[in-house]
Amino acid sequence: LLDVDSHRGLNPVPDEEVLELYGGTNHVPLEEVSGFYGKGPVMKQFMDVFSIPEMTLLAAANDYFNSNDIEYDPGHLYKDVSDAIGMVHIKGYMYKWIMQDLEKYILRGDETYAVLQRLASHGKKLFLITNSPFSFVDKGMNYMVGKDWRDLFDIVIVQADKPHFFNSCGKPFRRLDSNGDLQWDKIKSLDKGQVYKQGNLFDFLRLTGWRGSKVLYFGDHLYSDLADLMLRHGWRTGAIVPELEVETRVVNTEQYAQGLTWLQALTGLLERMQMHRDPESKKVLQDWLKEREELRAVTKNLFNPHFGSIFRTCHNPTYFSRRLCRFSDVYMASISCLLNYDLSYTFYPRRTPLQHEAPLWMDQLCTGCMKTPFLEEMAHIR
Image (cartoon, rainbow, N blue to C red; front, side):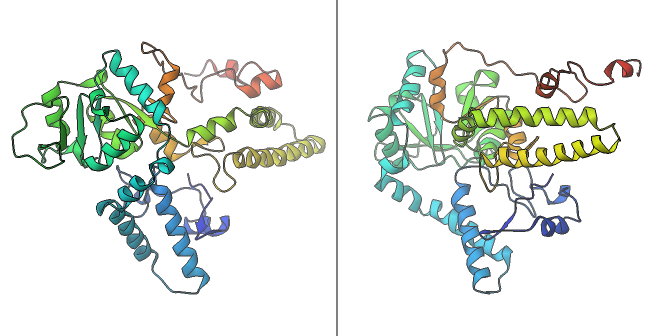
């Protein structure tokens, strides 16, 4: 389904224009949807916090060209912006800027230390696999955890080149000395206290024996961090979604709870009353339809006035939400959320009602109907 919240630069594109581009429907053709890693021939999925500056720069540049009547090819603009963002990482500018002002960019250091210390003190094996260089990791972890941060981890791997780390066996592990210089010795074991560069998951599994559901891996990118581990290797995965903090705050407000309750009730009333054809009933139904549409917009705008929730488009889960549920066993706003649970706590999967099942929906409770209409009459159908 197509979410018709599109922008050209900084200005919204009329719904009619967007629908016309897609043949007058809300359907996005399969061939235009991105591939497995969020990249495809037409659409690019922006899936993590690093996408925010890229989207912002794309919108600002697009708006500048449009505002100044400068002719341009959107494909060229996307490629140049994407290359520029990539260069910030490759040449190390981002790492340099963050290290110059750690207090501004690094949050929850005390909580991160508390989580790692708690896990390590209870005998859990901890490992770090990151695409960042060691100099950046070391300075950041020194700031958050302390100079002895490496004592908390059994294995530290930097510049891993994820997601290729998880699906390619071409790059061997290399050890770094205390100065961060590469060594030439062949890696026969992954030892605590050492720092390794590159490598691949197949050698990691062979050298550690850490396989299957006994491993819980946390990452903040669904494709680069979690997808391969979940689908190909059977690891348990946890997704870090910082936006969840705002989402849960909104969901727990009285305004949202009341709005959602009445929205569900209205939907149930419309379903059950639509068979009445007299003029008075039709008038009531039209009023309810109008109120329902207004309420849908209000509850959506509580999350974000431009795009709504990142997890839901009204009653449908977003593409991101569906991928999140597919590639992660649990998700949370921060790793520090684990401090709220005992280490032996079990997260049980929630049963999601299917369309043909008869759960106690909120609208059924609100309208006094405790069963699905016509379910008994349909019971004889096989």
